[in-house]
Image (cartoon, rainbow, N blue to C red; front, side, top):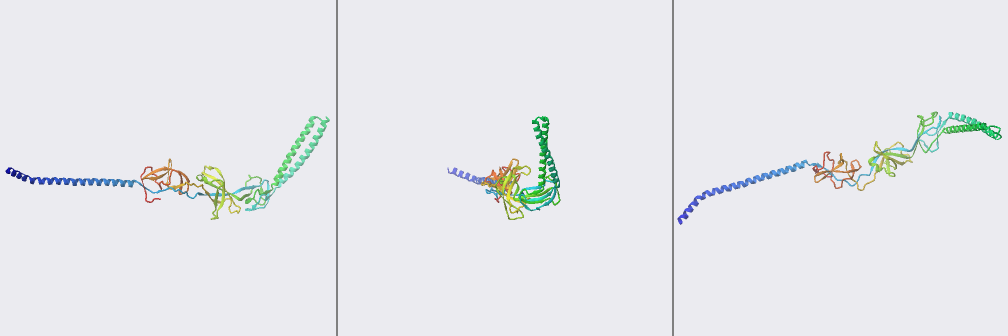
Length: 395
């Protein structure tokens, strides 16, 4: 029994040197596999992280960098400044109503006249002679009429006594009618010539200022307004003036009848003239797209001159809920006006309705809220859904 134990121990001792190197090799292979797997996993992870970083960098580079502004609730100054032309409240050329020669004029250029003042005297020799002839012819017609009347009365009396025929009596009565008609015609002609003769005195039709004198002593005068160059005077009423302003269609709300306006002229810096809108054309001029507006201004001091250029300030009706944005934020597309709104890194094109134009800013009636981040100066190629990145500079 001891012998068998000894043999077994010897066999075990003979095998033990082989088992040690095998296990060591196995452990080495296992450790190498672990290390290799670690490096492989690390490489994959690095590549994934690099790809993710590259994707994020690419996306950031592809996103459009924009600056944004927020709509303002306050509207700019509610007035517009427009050029205007001053005209006299009443202005008329004065012509002669009779033929002749200018005998004398009494008021020169710039003179103030009252209604009924004598402006000029005209010599009318031809009219005077025609009047004398007409009066003589009237006397002849009157004598003929009286003779015809007495004859007709006499024949009527004879007809009652059957001394004359009815036919002869009717002839005498008819002749009286002819003579009466001729007398009436002559009388009308005399009155016409008397009126023409009375026109040798030219009077002022209203209070005003002589703005032009186009005649002088001895000048030939032709009656009527159609004769070229025969306008004697031009009279303008300057106590009250009219100022005409062409208001653009988008600002017609400023042309309210009864609204007060301020007028300025270059020759009087710092001074304002107050006027009132009295009427408008009630129609837009299709050529200029403007509304002709008339302003009345008192000018008792005579500081404003007809024909002058003035600047009129018209006040616009205010809006309590007015929202304004910069004009460079607008995008004009075929389907209407749009603005770009940045939200969650994406641009959205929002349709809006424009109100008044203030130049650098415009009023937005609908489509925006004060909290919307409006893209300032957007690119024409901007579309809805485009990635955007808001610049650090936010206005």
